[in-house]
Amino acid sequence: MLVHAVVWGFCLPLLPVCWLQLQLKRRQNLGMSAATRSGRWGHNASGHGAGRRILGVGDQGILPGYGEKAGQGVAGYCTESLIPLSGDDATWQVVGHVGATASDVLASCRGIDDLKVDLILISMGVNDVSGLTSLMRWQARIFDLILLIRQKGTAKIIFLGLPPMARFQSLPQPLRAVCGVRARLMDAVLKRSVSGLDFAAHLDFETSAPAGPITDDGYHLTAQVQKALGARAASLGSNLLRV
Image (cartoon, rainbow, N blue to C red):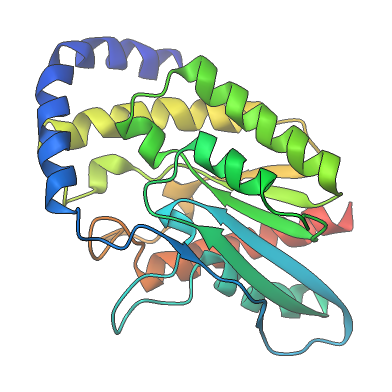
């Protein structure tokens, strides 16, 4: 993490240019769908035991993509992979929207009456990178979210690690490189924040996702990436649910 912090120091003079590039990029994407919320529990193939409920919450990283190769989202693929691992039936739901920050995710969870699920997958951080959320505020939101979830139930929690934003081909340089450095720094904070918790885990995005493009449109993960992350989340979730 110290190395990432030093590299970030060298990125600071580039922030004015990156800010301008970011504003232009946001204007180009004003027509994008701002929100998606699945209001029902999707059903996967039946297992043989008690039903599990998996909730995905967060930013665009938790949402299914768009178009013919959209995929069903990380939560859907996680549920699909978890069934043979646990031997239980399982259903899943997603609550999220494009552009959500950690504060938005926290607010969404506060608004969900029923958080008494078995497993919660959380995707956040990309928009905190572009919004230059401070590391102290970022860590505080992580702790607030964990505390809120555990106050409302006994769900196990998996945080999806921040993607390597240096591979976001839709971002121009130097914005792409600077976001890549910041994302790695914030991901290190996230990983450290959940380490030692027996009910939570950090899913390392970079080692779990396949090589190649991460997104089709610059925002939504490709189906291949969704499947890979979903399978890894199922493995982590299976271990957490045994505790």
